[in-house]
Length: 76
Image (cartoon, rainbow, N blue to C red; front, side):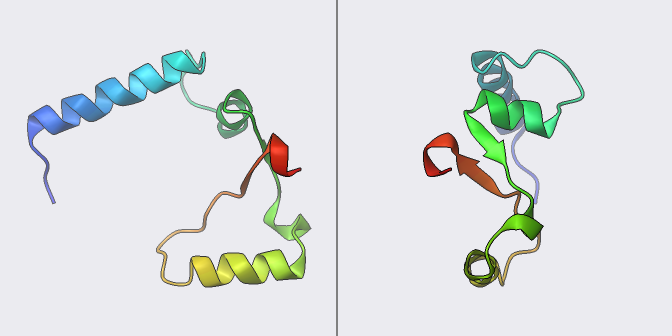
């Protein structure tokens, strides 16, 4: 699928604006730094309770990727 060139420019601008908003100025991006800037924490999948893993499995059973586990500081 190919988007219009204008749409790619809109997406690039949005991404740059978002990164500037959370004070990320370097490249390559470091996942943990981005998540911390957004107020979250990284939790290894292996440390999740079995019930939580089961819920992740059901939620993403048709997904073509493995989700990054992201929990806000409020849910810790």
